[in-house]
Image 1 (cartoon, rainbow, N blue to C red):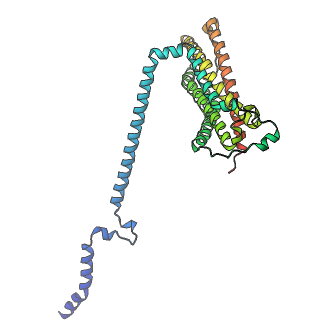
Image 2: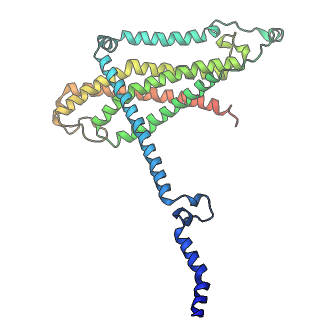
Image 3: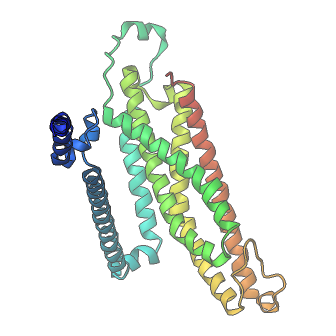
Length: 325
């Protein structure tokens, strides 16, 4: 009996330790020395699910707001296209002349001090005249200049060598034409605006960096600066001409061409098609004339686009020779 009592007395600490272990809360059982691992796995999963839910809610709200904005803009655009003012603007060439005159007037006003500036005569006059202090250019002007040029050059590369070729060799002709109908006006409108901003901001930055040019006639500027002004001005002018005078008739000819081809059950082939092999189109003189005029205007636009891209590359070379990192 004494031996049994002694054994019970010896094992009582072990029983107490087991009992205390059973009474410990679950959070202490999961504790392993690290502060991050003290958080229960269930709590971590619930927090992650809550974060994903919040992210999805924000994404859904942003998507709905963007879709609502586009719907509003599209409805306003549809209402404007049904108005008499839109018919007047698109049905005659007078608005195109007015827009061209406005853009030209803005450029002339910006360059007016240098169009009527005085010419310096001789080196002695240069030595006698005090050199004006260099004024710091506005950060807004620098952002406008670099941003407009970069966006314009990127849009030209994408539209000329990526988007146009990829869609032309991948989609049916009529589908490709409908896409180009949407992109063409926006592309040349964007290019005209960006080229004009680049030209005006470039002239302003040159005046800021070289104050002695502010009162001088453009004919007496440096040759490199004059080349850049001519290149940017030619780009803006050519893109404005394409947008106002060449793109609208080309799109009208494209619609007429597609209408005739749809009646002849063609237009879903990929690539170039001139009516060969289709008796109805080969006998249609109206289709041949329409197709010929369409090709002429389209080729003219393509050539002018390459000229503007070359002018942009000239200005890119000018920047590359002056940028130091």
